[in-house]
Image (cartoon, rainbow, N blue to C red; front, side, top):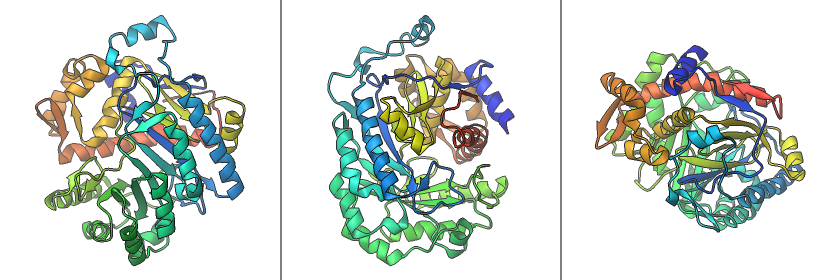
Length: 442
């Protein structure tokens, strides 16, 4: 599979140079000039481990969780207090990004404005009693403009816990249902969901966005199966749904068989058409909202800061990822150092690839936004690729905005599968074993 992603990377970056992640890192993160900056916090604790889940997680204990939250708050202050304009490491960096920043990109002294804050895991609700403390630490350094979201297990959806989150300032929740149907709950090793109790709790403690997550492309899964899940979600308190494809990571213990390509495309096209025909708003490749204001996505941001073990940070000139080891994360923070495990220093073309890949997750790319970010025309950099994508029927163009077609959305998903197994699977597989690898080439 790596040949597909390698050739794509070389073509789009116009270079055979791989993405090189090394164990160097900045002591001060240069986020001050970043616009459209999002925040993410990782809480890795779970009461049990789902076999299909690839994310960084460990079994919960109160003592370990409290130690981790103490370190997490220290990391937030370390990063928040480091706000400054980055000085390039070399003359090459100065030339690479010359003209890419404009004066109004530089933030004024004081708190940094950010779009949103999302908590993922793991099971963030296991730290609900300290959620207000974490959010308070973040708000010492940042002004959040588009709300705060938290991922929940269905068992977490109770009135007391929801009220605790709401009192802490949470405005959005995402419930990891995966499936309401017993046959798929069994396949995934999940318990049943008390739909009536969940709906009653959501009605008692309302949120701006209530999203419910589902997995598609499970063995034998049909359009009617997915339709039933989506209808059940919207009938029982959700105003937003996310339908993520099953991906078989090599390091998980799952024995679920992935759905063949042709069946997967038919299923994705059918459920997309169903949601659009119902008038639901498509806000990304996998998400549909019953109400226009309902949004839940920590991914579609030009730049973001990640706090906690395994959390990633994407800035104008670098991508970094924190150690996956909870123990080493705490030790690093206690030693007064950021818990960065690996850092990628971008060339300009590499950064453009990252920008386009993650922006396309929203199903659209605006040429004006690209030019504002990089100081150069999208057509000048990727005119041939855009024309070819239009010819293949992957995108349409209107007033400088490129919109994915159903065909394009499927092939984006199809390519993402290659990317995930070639890059993310390899990186996460190594980082699960080594807290601070020397380097990784992708």
